[in-house]
Length: 336
Image (cartoon, rainbow, N blue to C red):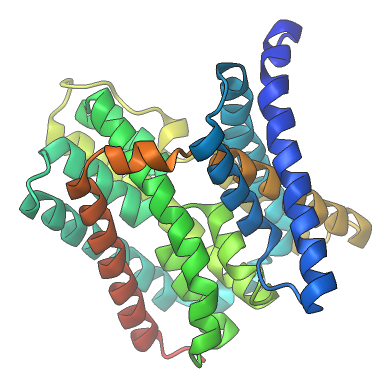
């Protein structure tokens, strides 16, 4: 539990994230008034508004603790609550072919992304971090892999900065892709789940398309996240026993992933009444927008571009390679 003094340190950042969230909801309302439709979801507005504020106005030091808290813990709580929207039936419908395709896509993406980084002259540790962030789950994968490979703080900062920036770009680009193609909601959900970095960003990319896209996109993304454990263990073996600190069980399998599947099981066996399911879904939606606002507030685009062109180019080429692998996966699955 948080002490009173420690919680007070979080209040400014949480309040700023909430304020950006209110602006995002206001932008959605304005959309409906002007266009009679929702063109961009509130999650996207929250990311963009937060990023613009940090880039052009900078984030005061007093806000940083609360912003970090909102982008991490509120995000994780939102993911747990999201579990009520996915049933075991959805997982069963995905089947072993889906699991196999996602796993193979992650492995191939790791190899290709790492190779791209090395060809561009990035150091081994930085290349590993970029590859993990791109292929698995963005910042979480980078943070999990960094102590295992003994990464320098500069490498961690650079890889996280570019992952955050590219993640926002992917969220903004994917919905128009759906509008311009003949992908079904199921296919688009798979594409989003395989290419978007973070779980809440999957929500931002799939929510404008439909419920089916949200469910399958979240499921595919969580399968990618679960690949973090095996990958970190392999990195550990590569480094050699005792050379660097041993990753904890919580690092290998984050608590919110366990919570997500627990809520999914509770929903499946019917322990939650419909009113509780609706409340959990609404709570997850609100917390996700607040966490995405906080994520935006943590990104300074000027710092990102100042970190180095080779890292940016490596990230862009890696995400393009991941998208191509995802399209191949769609072709293999033959989903419609």
